[in-house]
Amino acid sequence: MPNPYRGEIEAEIGGTHRRLVLTLGALAELEAAFAADDLVALAERFSGGRLKAADVLRIVAAGLRGAGERVSDEEVAAMATPGGAIGFVRIAADLLAATFGNDDVITTAAPGLQRPRAPQDAR
Image 1 (cartoon, one colour):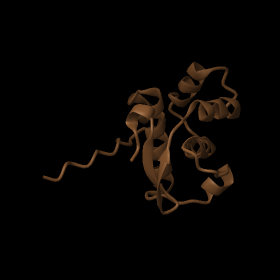
Image 2 (cartoon, rainbow, N blue to C red):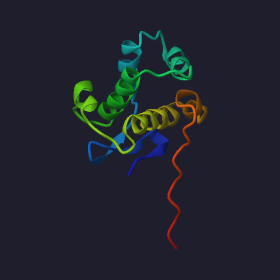
Image 3 (cartoon, one colour):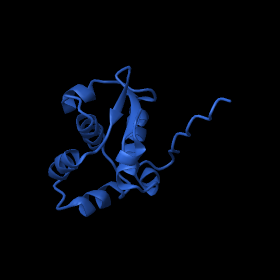
């Protein structure tokens, strides 16, 4: 079960429910990959509203590695998720929102997408 207080999310990737989190190490990895000077620059890059497929791949792969999985970007690129490419965009947007604490990231990083609703308690 993901811990939202730690910025964790859960997503189905490659037919398995996996935990993702952008730890400090994962964020440092993304800073280097995107040539961002600091975390503010990284957050600004993501809130710019335009993510390439390679950006989404790097974000998701870094999130998986942050949660302890030993996967390469190439291995993640070969995986599938429900919803296809748009499913990966949703995962990246949810992960960024969980990390930076800003639901606006979802609408700017993935215009037209809505955050998945939490399941209702069965009573």
